Image (cartoon, rainbow, N blue to C red; front, side, top):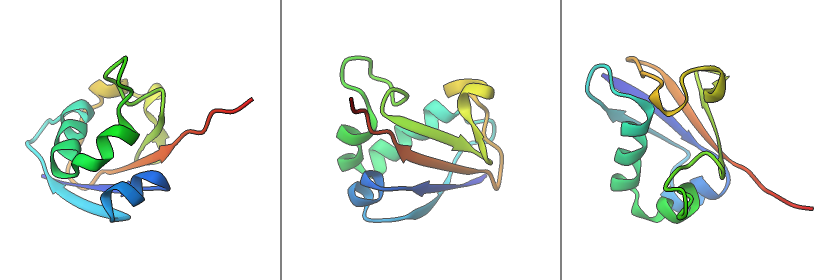
Length: 94
């Protein structure tokens, strides 16, 4: 199946792409897709993955088909053919 990925801000800078389509196995979960993205674009790892938690969520707003993954099944969200996943960096400040 083919899944569309969009990268915003620093993620676009790390991948040198704003969009990419990846072929994934049927029933692939979001966490598997993220591992694949890191493998395809190694420079994105430092921007996407929190090194202490080994998890992208503290640094990233992840949207699947217009819905934030916290209202879906988080990283266990199952992706389907034609889905769109958007990675938006989160800035923390005070």
